[in-house]
Length: 203
Image (cartoon, rainbow, N blue to C red; front, side):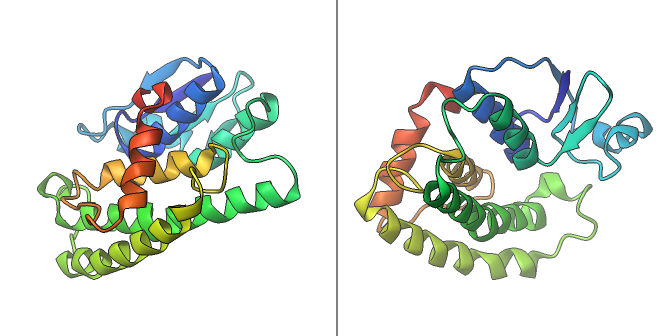
């Protein structure tokens, strides 16, 4: 088994944090995204979408997409339950993970990809107007998330979950995208400080 990794980029980091929470060690194969190694013929043979992470099992099966990889390990190692336990909790974790993907991580990524000079060679063409269009969407969602966190410690309720991993990484990704959590979002700031203090956050 081998996990093709992309360093500090959000989706590979989601998997590493998840594995750290589970206490699972998987051999990592670094992919140099700065050198566009993900676009090489060798890596494209593993994942034709040329994206990381990619998990290659011992029988040669390839699993891509960070949440799919996390679900694979959740099934093999159900403790602690990071996708929830029981119909309601599983649904709430899925709901908040998807919300944090669609309305925070993805828009932050759009801002970064379409405005940061380092992305000019991979985003052809960059669309600065799309970066600007996503900024108010991010702020609006952070307000919604802040109100939801007013009555609970974690994204989907009382227990830490994969939704917290997605959310933490989305907020962390705001820094290179040159965005900030508004001062008014005190609950988001409190939650982010708490989840960032977990040992797994450094994975």
